[in-house]
Image: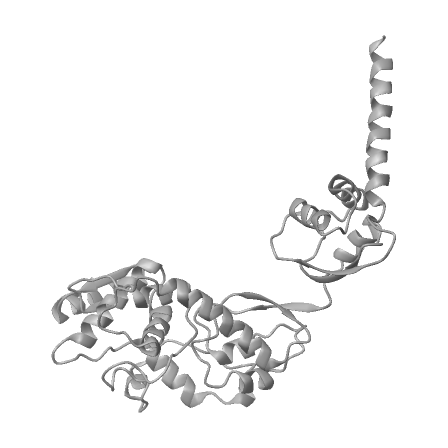
Amino acid sequence: MPRPRYFIISFFLLVIFVGVFVYVGNRPPQNRPQTKVFTINQGDSLLSVARRLKTNGLIASETGFLLNSYLLGLNRKIQSGTFYLSTSQTARSLITRLSKGGSQDYWLKVKDGWRTEEIAQNLPPDSPLSSDDFLAAAASQEGYLFPDSYLVPRRYTAPQVVDLLKSNFQQKLALASTDSTNNHLTDPFDLLILASLLEREGKSRESKQMISGILVNRLSSSPPMLLQVDATVQYARDRRDFRQSNLSSFSFWQPVTKPDLAIVSPFNTYQNLGLPPSPICNPGFDSLFAAYHPLPSGYFYYITGKDGKMYYAKTLEEHNANISKYLR
């Protein structure tokens, strides 16, 4: 057979083959409609979505779904969210629906080390909650609102959203606290307070574990030493200055100034021995882990240099030398 003719026949066979998959893949998997809830998480690949749609009986063919996605030009436009889909939808109709995003939920992102007020400050525009509602529901819950990305049903009230964050916290805490090596602090609330300090003071898990060991050394020294954690001063200052009316414009965690160190507050660890009375932020997993697993050392001092690195010292003289060398 002449080569040109061979390629022409092969091309037409390929077109027919693809056409069959497109046609078959577009057919609804069932004639009788059944509504199912389907969630696409951020980062899900098109292939993984296709596989789960097939498993849930929402498409007739994975390959047909993928081909129709590409032919419609929507293969890169599938949105995350929760969708109510019918088993009687064609693949093309379903793909178009998925490209428009879920209308039944929204994404709430909570960053490591945010205060409760910062969560309220950063509620997404499509959230039905007001910052006032969230702050009222989250009162006295500082520390328990675990930093993560949450797909929140729009029907959830503010207390339900707070419960969602707290439930995640309990799950993560169970993992972080396993085989605790912190023999000085055993009360879970004290350990949560410590974790909140570590969240604002350290960057990596190792640095947080080192700082955890240093703060434990200070707490257990005889006589006890002041913790002198700058983040507690920031918290005390912001707590003093913050007004709910200026939530949208308030800047939290600004650098500490010398006058700030004299602020009269139970949270100021430059003025009061021991831990502050409650958490100063919502710590992430590494900070929780570090609170329960401090690294033992002979250090009593630490700083973060201008180069972003941590420097430790056993004596005040060594500490002052580090300050002169790495901060000035």
